[in-house]
Length: 410
Image (cartoon, rainbow, N blue to C red; front, side, top):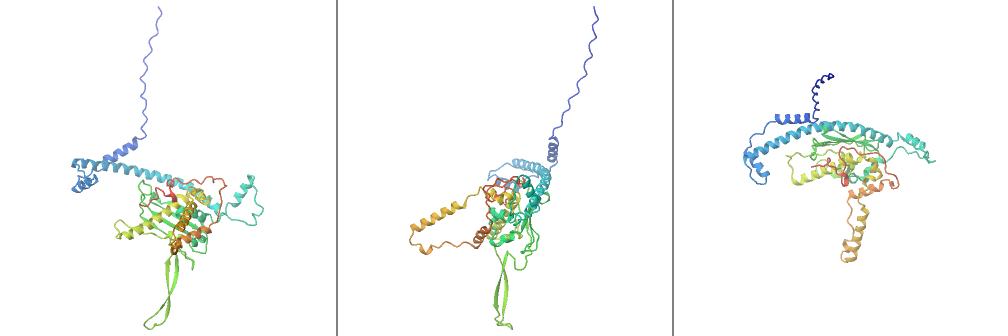
C-alpha cells in the first residue's frame, strides 16, 4: 500500500480586516466633547418659570419639565454655535477663493469699458471673418461710454434714486465693486470715477457693518458709513444754495441789507453716499421718528443690495435690459389709466373744475426726464450675452428690485 502524503498544515488565521475610520467620527467626537464640557444650566428661577409659562401661552409646566427644557436649549445652542463657527471658517475660505476669481473677471470688464481692449477685440473680430465699417476710424469710439449709467437706469430699485441732474455726472462712473469685510461682518461698495467736473474724489465708498451677514438669520445692520464728497465749486448735486436778503431793523447797521446763504438738501442719487444713523435698541425716539428713520435705512439698504447682488455681478444683463425682461410692462397700466380717465369724463358733468390732472412731484418729474436722457439701445435681435454669471455669494435675487434673502434689513 502506497504511503499517503502527510496532511497539509492548517492555514494561519487570517489577519483582521482593518476598519476604516468613520469620516464623521472626528466631528462627532468634537461635538460630543463640546456637549460634555458645556456648563449645565443653573436651576430655574421664578423669572424662568414665568417666562417659560408665558412662552407656552399660559400653559403651566412642572418645574422638573422646565429644567429639562432649559437643558435641551443649552445643548442646542452649544452644538449649533460649534457648527456655525466651523461653517464661518469654511465659508470665509470659499469667499476669498471665488472673490479672487470674480475680481479677475471684473478687471477684464473694466478694461473693455475703458477702451484698453478695443484693438484686441477688433482684431479678434476680423480674424473670425468679421469686417469693420469703413467709417469706424473717422468716429473712433473708446470703450463703452454710458455703460454704468445705462445699467443703473434699467434697475428698478436704483433708478428710483436717479434725477436729471445725476445723469451727466454718472457718465464718468467707470467701475463698481463689492468686497466682503474680513470674517463676514459686512461689506463695502466702491464706486470709481474718471476725472470729472463735479467732484475731486476718485472713489466713493459705502460700508455696511453686519456681524451676522453669513448666517441664516436676517442680517442686522450695526453701522452704515458713507463718504464725504468733495464737490467742486458750484457743482454740488445734493444741495442747492439759496440767497436771502435781510434788512437790519436796529442798531448801528439799521437799514443795511445783508445776504444770507442757505443750503437746502435736494433729491439726488449721490445722497446714497451719506452715512446713515442706525438706532440702538435703547434709542430714545418717538414712534414717528423711528418709522421715518427705518424707512430711510430700508431704502438705503435695498439700493446697496441692488448693487451687490444684481448690478455688479450681472452688469451686462442690466445694460442690455435682459435682467429686467420679466418685469411688467408699464404701458399696459398707462393704457388702463387712460381708459378710466375717458370714462370719468363721459360719465360726470359737474367735475369740470377738477379736470386738471394732479401735478407730478419734483422727484418723479426729474426721474422721467432722466430716463428720457438715457441712450436708447435696442438689443432685441441680439443673441443673449455669454458668461457674466452672478456670484454665488449672496444667493440669487428674487422679486422686483431683486430683494435678496441675505440683503434684508430687519
